[in-house]
Structure formats: structure tokens, C-alpha cells
Image (cartoon, rainbow over all chains, first blue to last red; front, side, top):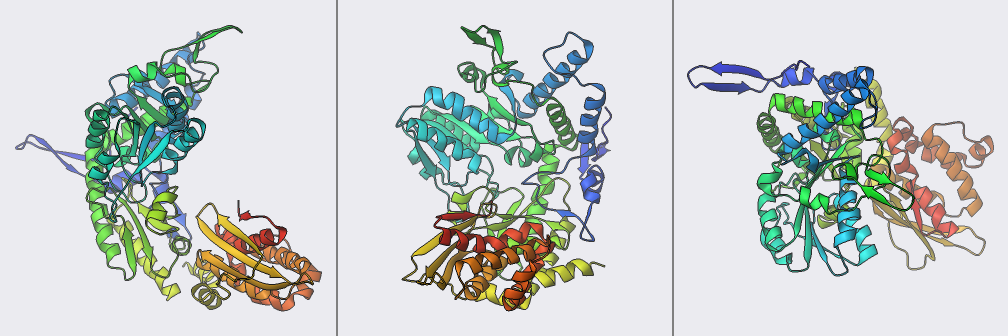
Length: 425
Length: 160
């Protein structure tokens, strides 16, 4: 497939390297949603943290796969099924390369990041954890990295410990280290807070967790989008993310697990595709990743995710991250100038997610009013109620940026917020 | 231009609503309110607690509330607690039905109810702007669901 690369690569013969110019307009041209109008205004989409828009490259690849390359996988002895299987397994390899996994067998396709957490909790957790064993999470986890452990706690009597953050949203390393001990069996922390934008020191967290003899798991739902991941460099035991925040389709998530750990985990769900041999007396299970993918998998969604990864790679993760830092700096400065606006989360290491409150205007009212100007943000608790409680808030407004956002989007947001303030004046 | 949507926004955030949102009436925890319920909008985390005292004649003697929420949900709770004082449980249910119809914009208010509660419906009309904003209908009806739950003896109301 030909890729319409949105980056202008000017070769500088003297320097002998490419001087990249981030062409945001070319990127926007790849995303049909950027042409949508809302309430008579061009859409200003600032909710990529909830779910990102999709480039035509993803949409067309999925369409083509449904039209011309579709059959069930791992089954038929005919060409079309072979092709579908090849596409599906190539998608797995593509994900493995994107995360620098040692093997594609370490990549399990799930429904989303939440399903990946539940897989680890149900399979690894039930087998390995006993009453009194401890799991350490942080105060800024998404509910997906809290509730599965609580379900396991209610069943097994494990203990959940919470690593604190400071008022700016920084992860507190010393306090975290003090929670670790002989009883710690798993450390499960977010790479990037979906509310505060805080980026946690994952490599150091992994080192300390391993020193304590625990496994370490990271929630990469936001982190893989804004910072990327090298699971071998970080030495993660588990890592989860979801396709739809990475410019890919819904219905596809990824659980990465080190192969020796996955091999010792029992199946999560039973059914077709995950078995070697079934009799009514006894069933034997396949090796990972097949063991954890019961039933017909999200075939086209996996292909779509691979197309999204190709697209991100064609722009370059570093180039995207650099662009997003500029957006973050501009947003932090511009929003900071609005009277009565407080930014929630000012961590030293932050990605392009900005939560805020405005004195006298509830986040929901902000959301409704600025939507009248075509601006889409998230308002609410962001599936992180313990974090909201930590800051004494019921809700915040959140602007989260993607590769297609431009500085002007921030200016439109600021104007719309001033309009909201005017109504409540 | 975008006059239509701006008109809708202005209709939603009328002066009366902004005033009730900023200075809610009956925003207190009464000492003698045997009935209460927690209202929760799980989509946004907004929470209200509504307190009710019924008289021997089964009429609402006192209604009050506490909680956090958007301008719409607070204004609605503020107006509701005032309007329902002195009404019977059956009247509350009929008025809730009429109010719900106003907020969703689906169907017509029952003619008998429209006549019976003419003045109240007139006051509550300021909240009917939510019908242009389907995501916000639950904000306007949360307090009503909650007082209903308090009177029926349920502990919690949810807009889900």
C-alpha cells in the first residue's frame, strides 16, 4: 500500500541528514474528521485522550481487508483464509516491533486495554496471588487499573497499596519505594496519567519493583501514544494499550507479556482457537499467544491497528512528540492567562493532556457551551475517581491533544472558554 | 452565522438558572428529615443528597438538598425543593411526569397536569432548554429522580 506521508523530508546535503518539517496541515488532510463541522463551526477536536480520530490510511486498509481479504483465521485450507491469517499475524509482528518486544508470541490481542488488565488479573493473579500478597498501584490510575485488582482482592484477600503523588501530580519515588517489600508481588502503574498528563519514571519503577522481587505492569493506554515504549529497555513484565487511542479502530487492545511468564499462565477464557485437543474428559491448551485468544479474534481491527502503527511510523513518533510538546507549552501558557482557570496537574514530566477547572463554571457547563463553538473536550471524572477525590474535585474539563492538532486549536479553545465565562459572569 | 446555537445556549443558561445555580435555595441538611436519598450521575460523578420530611397528611413539609453538580442540576434541585413543598406524593409524581416531558421534548404534557400545575410548570419552563442538549437532560432530572427515591424509600437514585 502506498502511504501518503505527511512529513516533508528535506535532505540537507551538508548535514547529511533529514531536516524534518512537521506539516500539520498534511496530517490533517489524512483525517476526515478534521473536515467535520459542529454547530456551524469547524470541529476543534481536543478529546484524543478519550479516543483519537482515524486517518484514511486506517479506514481504507480495513475496508480493503473486509472487501478482498476476508475469511476467518487459523482455519480454512484455502487461499483467502491463509491471507487473512497472514494479515492478522503480520499485525501481531508489527505491534511487537512497535513496542520492541523480543517475540511476536508476546503480543496478545484483546478487546481493549481494560480486557488486558482483566486477563492478567484473572489468569496470572488467580494462579499466583494469595491472601496477604500485595499489589502496588498509584493514586492516578484509571479505573481499569483499579477495579480488576479489587475483584481479585474480594476473591483472594490480596492487599492493594497506593503510591502517592504530590499536588502537582508528580509520582513520588521515595514514597513508592517505601511501599515495596517481600509481600509485593505486582507493581501496576500508569505510564501516563489520562487526567494529569504526568509521565511516570517507568524504567526506575521497573528496577525497584524487580529488586523487591515483584513483577511490573504498565498501563500504556496514553503513554504509547505520546511517548512510545520499548518494553525490553524498560524491562516491563506486562504492558497494556488500546488501539483506538493510537489512531486505530475500537475493539482491539494489546497485552504484552514476557514469554516465560505467559507460558506459565492458565487460559483466561475457554473456546475455539485456544486448544490443542479437546475430549469430554480432558482438554490441552495451546502455547501463548493462542492460549489467550479464544474464539474468532478481532481480525480486521488488528489489521487496522497495524495500519495505524504504519501511519504513526510514517510521521515518526519523535516528530509527533515534539509537535505535542509545543502544543502543550502553548496551551499551558494560554490557558494560564484566563482569569479563574486552574490547571490540574503540573508535573515536571508531562504529555499533551491539560485538565483544568474554572472558578464558578462547572466542567459540564464548560463542555456544553464550548461545543457550541465546535470545541470538543472531555468533562467529568475521566474514569479516575480516586484521583478526583485526591484533588477534592468531582470533575475537571480536559483538553487532550493529538498529532493533528495545531496551535490555532488552542486559541479557539481559549476564545470558547472566554465565551463560557461571559455567560456565567 | 451560528445564531441558532447561541440562542439555544442562552436559553439553557438563563438568568434564573444561573442565579439558582450560584445561590441555590434549600441547600442544607435539615435536622429532622427522616427521608433521604443519594442521587448520582455515574457519567459525570455529580452527586446530590435530597432530604424530605412528610407531614401526617403525607404532604411534603420540607425538602432540601446538598451536593455538587453543574449549573443545571443544582438549579433544578433548588427550584424543585421550593416547588414541591406542600404537595402530596401523588402530586409530586404527576408534576415530575410533566417536567420530564418538558425536558425531553418528547410528547405533550398531559392536559390535566398542565392545568393543575400551571404556575409550577411556568416556573420550571426555564429548565426546558435542556431538550436541545440530550446529554444534559439527566442533569435537569437528577434531583427529581432522587426525591422520588427518597420518598419511595430507596437509598439511591441513578440517572443510569
